[in-house]
Image 1 (cartoon, helix red, strand yellow):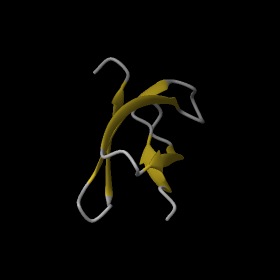
Image 2 (spheres, rainbow, N blue to C red):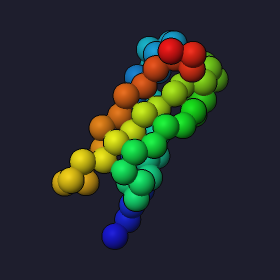
Image 3 (cartoon, one colour):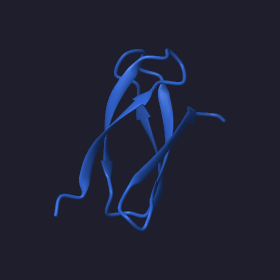
Length: 63
């Protein structure tokens, strides 16, 4: 089973929609990924529910 999924998110800085790759093998994780448009650091909080669905919350790096 493939544990990697693509998800579209909106950059909290520039508002552009970008695609990120999520690892669904880890239930809860937080990491920083640079926006592909404005290059600013986005904090991603990812949680996986019992059905394997990923919930993603994005924020500025220092929030």
